[in-house]
Length: 183
Image (cartoon, rainbow, N blue to C red):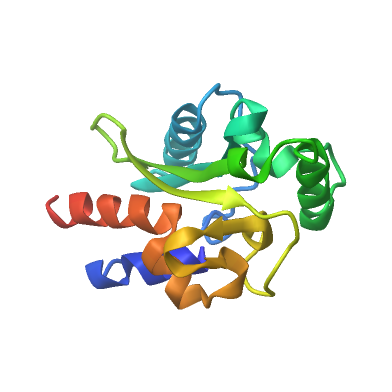
């Protein structure tokens, strides 16, 4: 939510969270794509809250793993796995793959639901490589093993402000912000 607040600040709108609206329902992500999952969440939470709603789904896609973990990024390895556990599992699964084949991307789809309108989506992605050893203390998830060539660092090696400018979520939310500014 903090990242969304920062990215949407130029619109001068008031954002409320599910907690603010006392919505406790957990939406099961049953889609086969990031877009399907984001749409399901935006529409259902929008209906529950009765307000325009923005939701996202995002994850990492590793080409050598056929795009895995993909939509299962947050659940990769199963329940109870930490970010460190998921990173270690991913690194184990690419252990025999040459470094040059460790291309990957972070992908994010933001869905915007406005009552009476068709739900619209905005996609952002950032291309990089999987690094064999984690680096950096910032960020979360797969950031410590995602190397972004233009800055020659992992996403965990940069500040949150730097990450907002280049991240997949940042791109998607900025597109949504532009769309919202025209409404």
